Length: 159
Length: 159
Image (cartoon, helix red, strand yellow):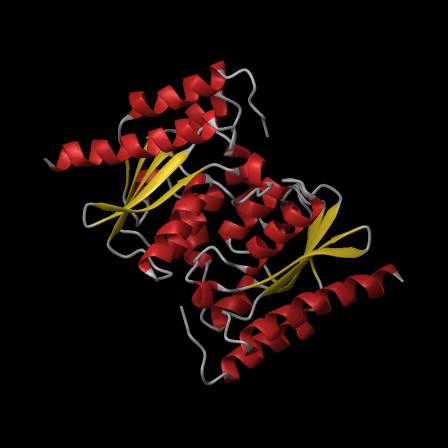
């Protein structure tokens, strides 16, 4: 039974991808977050329709699940995404800390239809000064002041 | 004059960090997006106050700037962030495509106050099967169907 359930959840993710694409919301990517056998979050790509480059399926589904679960962590959850996550979404998955991830298509499949995140994976692995977008440090002492204030803050909520 | 302006924008990013932290919105991180010398987007960390693990300063500022500019791309923009971006935010920056990024604190500074994204950077560089969160492929053929539909779609908006 378990295997069938997993395939059903992936089907939900793929259907979210197709539904969103058909409605011209964005690219063909969908995602669901499942906890205890129940879908607690849904998302599909809405980059072009909402002018939000961060509105990928996984980011959207994680945000939806966290609202529904009233938590900024997804412990005990399983993410089903119709395609292997891009670096941004992979980062979001690590911050959200689900138990595991199922993915349908690979990033090679995505590259073949014009969504090539291989470039971003390569850039992230580079030293900061070797990246194609120039990064420059500025105002270090001033910025450290915020961190010192955080260290001294007595009522901070750590995460 | 240019150098002074840049420092002023970093000051705005740091002030957003401090203001958000003082209001218990989240960690001590702030960001502004600047175009043609004008701030077009602002953000600060709101992870704990909004139960959104993706509500980092850079993601929030990028989303704000894109709404204000009515675009999902930040060409011609400069991002000022009070701390070197985590992998999720770095991915978001690559998708948004600003011209350059200024950062205040380093990720080593962040690690010292308990925000250690070095682990995520290391995980992203690993082959998918070697990562600490298990990733498993499932329903490949079914998922490819969404991609085939995208390829055949005549009115798609590519990005």
